[in-house]
Image 1 (cartoon, rainbow, N blue to C red):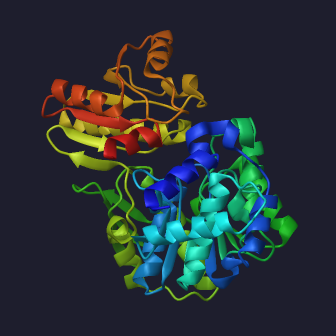
Image 2: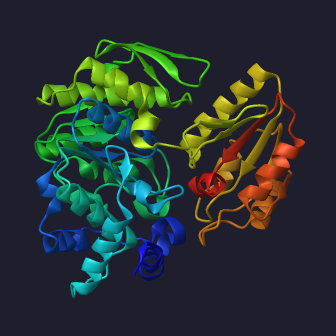
Length: 428
């Protein structure tokens, strides 16, 4: 099979949660352990950092990877989902996995006689680990797919575990309450492995403290330590920052929500240094200033065009959209223009709660992504009307964005989001 045939086989033969939802969800580590044994434990051939949480784990993973690269470490990065190219999930020093390596891995798997039935995520995770091992990376930054305790990535024994925050998402799998979700996320905290938590309070904080105590490890809370002392937005959309960790630095990632991610990353760096990993100040400054160029990160408060200013963002749950809608409102007020929102969701999202966060004074272009899991635009229009918000339905993001651009004045702002897959279709 060539590369495209290989991708078609992966998508057709293996369930992929991001496209099909609950039908693809397979909790538990049995298959991951079996695959790991079959491929001779590739994750034991490199050191890793495990990143979980509800929001911000992608940005946090990319920032840490960029800093490790800047220090000169050969750095693997495994994240999900991808936006445009499947190979975005698996990178070394920012370079996507070779197409030939994808083909070879799948061929090896198909010809192996392996009798298990791994999910898309389990198999692509093992592809990443196998690639990282064969290319002899020094460190791999591994993003949790969903949850933590039963996520297939949880077979690794990292140098550090990072949990960004807890909010409601995937409640049909992880639990209905924040405490239940926190217990699942806390499952990546392991014996003797230090942990950093970005933000937690009350019962959520107690969940993490109890888990750390159970397994006998240390835990730091970034929102208590607060190593980010100054973080001021600048015209290019990034931030000028200062921290006792590394002095003054620039972070190119925009969006107010990144302030908490930066604080989490700085705390993680403090811990990595404490356990003996060399990371100098200049590596931190270079990594933060060049995250996107070094790692290929896209879709985080990403400016696409000016006049009208067009922003896309992959924030897709209640907590993530709360931040982006606040940022959108501030940006629109500073420009003195109107808001045009191109938006769509997956069908299993708690849409009623999310719609309540959306501004009433915007023009809405309702659409759906090109995946089976997408909520049809017509159904979304009905949902909006139930909340007293009118919007026009469009067949896809391309048509919706074209309509928004036709209606927008130069001082207006167009926002594209609601779902990672809306952003993916738009960028593609």
